[in-house]
Each structure stands twice: as structure tokens, then as C-alpha cells.
Length: 200
Image (tube, rainbow, N blue to C red; front, side, top):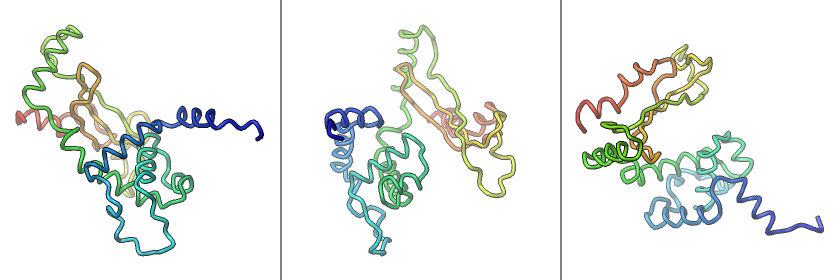
């Protein structure tokens, strides 16, 4: 290890992780400014002195790593030396509660008009307000669920349905339908269809 190069290892670290150091610091700063993450958010029930409570940056890193890779929580716990299942859930809930109204808001009428116009000018699709598709997300099915989650591809799943805009942005999504349902069945029971039918 005499020829150990620190700059090279930082470069390799950045290339292996989804979020680089700069993006991580930027996200942490944003979350602190908006008071999304506090030092004790959701952790006041922990009374065991042997449990190490990670810093805000570590909590964000664990949560982003989990969301980006889908790694097992036990693996994250060993890798970060913390109780990852508690930290990941609480941090993800805090981020969602604060950022969802801003970044996952249902588009208004003006936004739909812009999307329709951009689909026509950019892709030459008239009267198109979004491209819709679904994705089966593999899960371990809950006990006694029988074949509710069994899809036609041969594994258990829940379905994510999303509507994408002309610039590849997600306009709306619905998550959680049973994997056994067909595309039309998923659309018929989805919150997206209900929102369109009620003109919201």
C-alpha cells in the first residue's frame, strides 16, 4: 500500500456511488435549511445507550443509498454500523412529508396545457398530455396474500404506473397495485384515473 493515491480513491468512490460528494452536501444543506431533518426526528423513542445515533449526513447517506440501490437493510446496517432500518424509514418519511407537496404536486390546468403544447412542438404528437407506462417492482409478498402479488412474469410484485412529460419528467405516479392485475385493471382502480375523471 506504499503507492496508495488518495485522489484516485476519491475518484473511484465518486464513480461507484450514485450521489457524489458535492450533491450529497447540497442535499444535506437543502434539507437542513427547510428543517426537514432535525437531530432527533423520529428517534426520541430510542432509549438504549448502546445504539449509535448517526449524524444528519449519515442518515441522509443511508437513506439515499437504500433508495438508489434497493440494498438489504441488514447490509446497510453492517456497512454503516448503525440500525439502518430505523434511520432509513424515519428519514424517508421526513423527506417525503416536506418535499412531496412541492416536488410531487398534481399538475394544474396550465401545466397540462404546457405539456400538451410541448408534446406537439417537440415530438409532433397532438393532444397528448403524457406518456403512461407501468413497471413491476419485485417484492417479498406479505403472509397469506396467496396469488395477489403474482404477476405474469412469474414473480411477486407491486406495480408503479407513471405519466411522463415531453422532457422525460414524471408528472404523476401511482404505486401499490397488485402485480396480478392487468394494465387496464390497474388503470381502472388507480388514483390517476380518479384524478382525471374528477378533473383535478
